[in-house]
Image 1 (tube, rainbow, N blue to C red):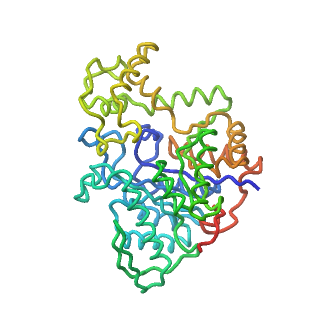
Image 2: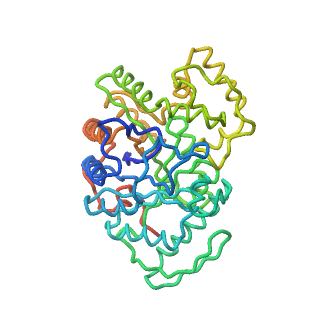
Image 3: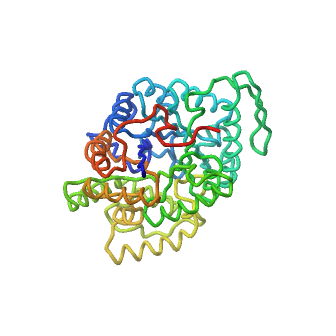
Length: 427
């Protein structure tokens, strides 16, 4: 039977969250996280993902003041949630580029143990220079070499988790040098569940080699089908079964009593997400100049961009958009002139909502049931716009529709995250 798996990814930064609105819960307060996690548990979600950052983000060398800052370490927060919940999985985003395997493996194993086998690790890498500066490394690793280190890092962590407390583990590879004793006994699920979110060839190979769950960016149906086929081919190349990994694309949900109401609400959300200052900051990354003097609701900047392409170590723009900026700006100007778009209008147009499903609860449930029944995905990792509002709406309105269609659980059938995800036992 096809089973839809659901998680929520609480990013903490970026344009998806409408954190400046008065109805957004306090973003750094533990009560917010407890309420959200308990709501998700009431909705029988597999997992609560917590994003993490090792330094406040920058834009053109300045602190990026358009995101929330000041959240505590993800593992620390999830340890508090372990005591406030009973079943839901608790997934911490943790970086392989700047952490050390023995230390991070111990902290993740500790979360897994104290939560009764509900911990997961969202394996991420970083190439931006401001994060590296906090560790006295600057940019440090090239994009693809990040995945080389990540693979060695995960292998080292797995070796520590498989060892008995007191057993010495030694690994000396290209980018990881480990000599440490295991210190934490195994949890009921054996080890933390491994999540991976990279979509480059290096990221896909890392997922195929090590991941239990992939947090994919391929949400459109055709893209999801193609991604699933590619990943399953890579799994076979590493000797893994086609169903060894759960695929959970990121998805935003906008619900309404009618399709028209949902579309109107979605347009409002996009406008709220793309504030004037955020639209200006987005264009500054391409122009390479201070554009704060321009009206975000006025025409595009009439000045030429700075020489050179985007600095790959200083921005948050995807890799594929870091070159060809002159031609891209030319196309943007043509589009803006043709459709009379302001700066903010253009940014909304060229940065479409990530994986948005818009409609009535029944319409979205039908669409998701089709995705999972055809094995395009195994579920979705939700990106809420408002907290706790979006989560409450999904639990109260969408989950019952999914249950009616027979694609969503009506109760938890296990106690560990691995059991929730129907993953095979650790070998």
